[in-house]
Image (cartoon, rainbow, N blue to C red; front, side):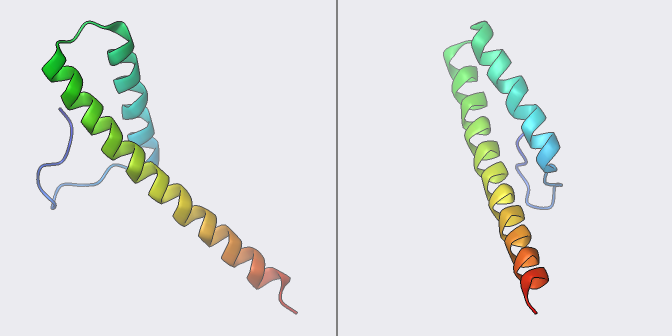
Length: 73
């Protein structure tokens, strides 16, 4: 599994996390993994999805801030 077990390991970029999520979905849809592995990759997917959501929310906040700055007189 590709989840960082060590906080000093690099955090994947949004694009890398999204790509890994797509791999996880494909793996689970193929139904070729056992229960334990399926649970492990599902858990990894949940963590990646949360991380992606946080990054999207942060990006949205930055865009809103920039819009407010440009709208100000």
